[in-house]
Length: 248
Image 1 (cartoon, rainbow, N blue to C red):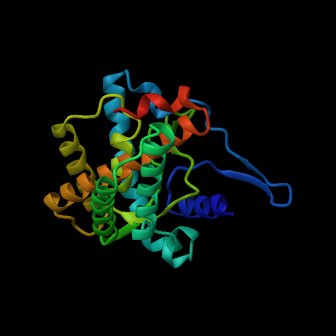
Image 2: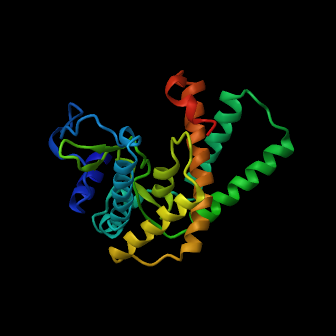
């Protein structure tokens, strides 16, 4: 099961996911550690505490990337999945179909469709050529828990796969934000992240190259999320949860 596979990988690399206590595959039951119900975003109103935990969360992204070689060595399912051009393009098509179609009920002119799809395909192609590392895939403040000992813990990690080094950082800093960080804040977080990678002995990334990749990843991930929020709102009837994140 992907959840068990990735959990074993993360625990092996000292990434703080819930412990697995028992499994009954036939019944489809996994008994795991109870982390409580305090998600990271719930402490964002406390500026000092928020900054402390944000740095911990960003350092954890570097730690996940440090597990890349281990994922390949153990033949983890995460090593066999990737944000390749097909996957990135599929996510952008999902945005196109559900933002313009399901949510807005809007039909674009043929020339508009062709122009937009060409731009999106270029972004997917460029990002797919970036060096790949292990990514959580849905790394945001709702999937990070503060446990009973006030430690930061990672959940919802079963879809881990290989992708650009900027992927989880973009997701963490920009997903589900009603007020996005300033450019100066983003630059500070990027440099902190690159320093955490260096401390772990990971290959150096030029800050300017990483800034460009980060911007392209912001477009792709932001549109992917908008497509998901549009689908959940217009198709699944869950607008109360997701609609407010679409406009930002």
